[in-house]
Length: 232
Image 1 (cartoon, helix red, strand yellow):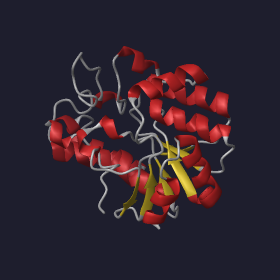
Image 2 (image 1 turned 180 degrees about the vertical axis):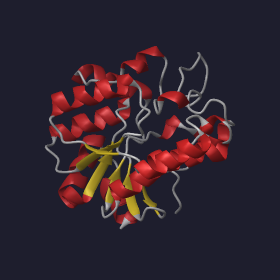
Image 3 (image 1 turned 90 degrees about the horizontal axis):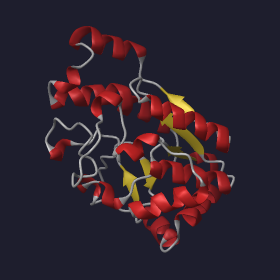
């Protein structure tokens, strides 16, 4: 199926890719948004084509106030239902009780444990049973993602992943937002190109890598939470 999809979608733009996915998979496709600028582009396009694709977000419990602001603005403007998934209460309580609220600073293992509880496990619940997972990934965003293709098979989650904006540049995204008056997180105007949990995200300085502000205390090669680690 993957090769057929690659053939069918080759040369199509983002709107056409989403239209195809919606027509073929409908409610068996799901889109994950973290309300970053790429995700806002996709939300806008899904609204324009009146897609039946499901939309969800992961609320880790440690998001920026600005993220909640753009979440509300998105609901107000597009009227698309966005299903929220939260970490298991018992898992968070156990983690905080045994290791404290900031254990993720102490080691990569602790940080990955926190990411698993707050993001990976809820993600698995969110996409379970769906055939296609749509993301806002762009190829130029991270060195750890440059091996990806715009359509791929996620073996770990047993789902097809589609990245409609895979070949878009940052300039293309920003232009789309401006031309279409798409709401976006105001932190992007304060040198936050990649926005996650508040304790794990900072602004970047001129010349720093796109994801330098995420888990900045760790080695560059380790800067993924595991949401988009794909085994083929």
